[in-house]
Image (cartoon, rainbow over all chains, first blue to last red; front, side, top):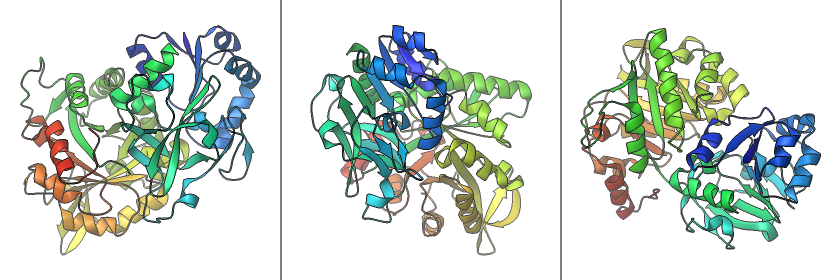
Length: 203
Length: 251
């Protein structure tokens, strides 16, 4: 069973549907026991970093996530990926989970071209830098769907794939140990996204 | 680089897609779920569903359909039609919509844009405008293009973005249905004023019209209904063509 962490952030309908369409058992849950008995965990998230982190802290699930992340594959998606990092500079400075080294900063700050639109919203090519079982069914250069204004940086060691936006190599996929993060939405990235989720379900 | 998006638009009334549908090889030519599946398989980058039902029964049917689509189509879904309150946003977002488009509802109550943007994020709020030239001015029309509001379209767009709209769909009433190309003059005027993504709508008649559209900076997507529904233009073929014209598209 794949547990989707429910901490009151975002709409999980498509994510659960996509996993079910792939034939995986998926459960949206906020219970520690369910996270412990799951084979894999997905940490979703949309909205603002500080708000999401506060809500996640309030569930009391953070220690459980830390323990389970050492034992089974965990995938953070979009803001759920950003939460994995050491800290975020989204409206102030906020500590993250520290499961992946690096920080989250405003994309606008690092873009040279002021005419490029932020949020980085739409389909962009995902270029694989390091091969990984997650890309078993995915070809480098396929398009994935992004919606975000902040991005992870100073995490080159853990970066598996990037998407180019102006002068910035947007961190697309990271991995440290069993912990994965995807900045884009695989559950909204058509067939290519489903193939990434399939590989995650088979890790 | 972001790919230019091709977006088919499905108008749904009482559970059926209306407007020139002439599909071949589909079991049910006006079944929104079947059409969504078809467009997903042909490479559509996003789907827009407009609920043009007036009745409460029709509205409930629409959300059922939306849920059925979101259960098997995994690309962004935008929903519009009859969105007047943040409760309406809630209703469709829970059924799998990613973005919600407001039109007459925002004209009646502009604070809806800000309230929704604050609750769901700018990226979730799409300002859809039906615009027509009146006395040399781009004028916003309400009620499905039937009522001149007297509002200047460019000012309305700037205000909407200021309130938190994360994207604009510009439907030109002047070019809509004429199939003579998008309203590039109107689109350029809009692109000069706002920096959010712009979706062009109204006037697409052939593949060249899309190629022409995407040479204009600031235009992110092209939306059409009948030319896709009638299969006059096939999305996969369109994307192949655009690629030969140097346009970055998802294939």
